Image (cartoon, rainbow over all chains, first blue to last red; front, side):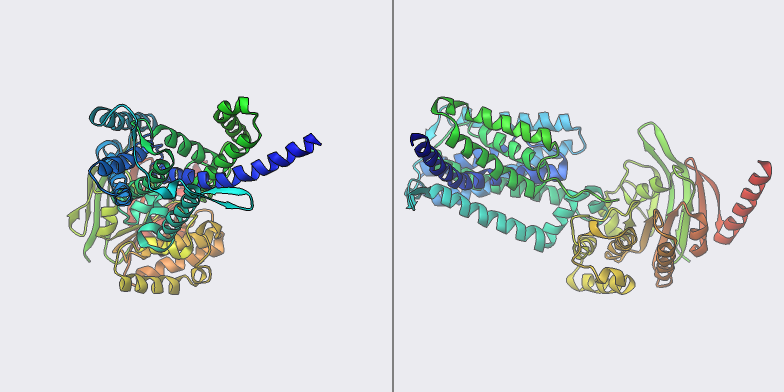
Length: 304
Length: 237
């Protein structure tokens, strides 16, 4: 009898966690797709991707301190993250365009450290709170389940952002050129597609999407800190690896898979083991990669 | 006739010399065949002209201007289009989008006109415009690669091994189309391993072996000396 009851409770808990995972996964997808876009073009994992979240969050924080409202700050943050991504590319990665994978990796680590150092030095090494609009703290109840507005908002924001991105990639000339370049950069250039333009655009988009994720993260945690970009980076990287590095669809899919794994673990792990939730989640990711080393959604095999 | 392309080129990959001081000319309106066995440096020559290997040594003069060392996109915009070895269509893009990429940022009307011409030349493509290019047959992919290159309305078309891996009937079709393009005024530099086929439509030819020029001249003359050479080789054996 008690066993049956606890099973019912955990089923209920599981559904609740899965509802949350849709919201969390939306944030992960927004983080992952930017990383995947840059990787698909340059074959480079931008380990400074998380710092775009930091830039966006601090933009909101600094503007708020100057008396600007959260939402105007949020719009400015998207712009700032996009510009920061373009600046990274122009100043750090373009001079290393044909460098080895390891060189680019180290360069992106360096950029990440520099950006983090700037906020640490010029703002504060400590976390600073940001007053977040009420919408981020509400929740609605549907049939006994709680849906936080922040997750609802995340799902909505991801749907709009990814919808616009798909429209851009499928319908616009620049978007199609970007897809072509991600499939065969050399040949896209031989077709007259300007390499610098495509790469700058990909960085800008990855920055804006990281900015959207940053607003959602900020709304959730209500504070900024210089190292706040690390977790988002890790999440983006894991999501990309699960889905298959370089695949945009894989990045979105991987983001949701990772969020669901975390949700299921939260529902089933005993309270005493919850602290190790991420370790368990990563163990499952490693198991997935053992059976599908190319990721769950691999790219269309290039035909010759 | 005016010289459209005039090269004097050495191409290196690190310490390896792929093409050694090759001098070659293409006049407006002709098909020039660049022949030779696998590894002779034919594709490297095209890569050097198209800007895919840089830096190069020597010079590439196109329409009277030096273009050696320019980026591939800049070279394409000067009027040189490449149909690469192995076709290299964008596999995840539809046929329509592959053509669209080939048209880059030319005006809407110019792209529409080129698209109509290409689809008229390759009716097989018109029937599968929405298909992903990766799902096409080898012959269709080859037609798409040539069509995609034609979308920029080039003055010079570089064709790299268009017969590679295709059934003889398809090769006939593609070579007939190449000859047709020339008759409509497109200048073509054709790289081929299949010398007989290439010389069948070419005006002139160059023969490469291990990066160096072995022979050059009118297509008929190369064809004859080739027959002679293989005859002598047979006698020697």
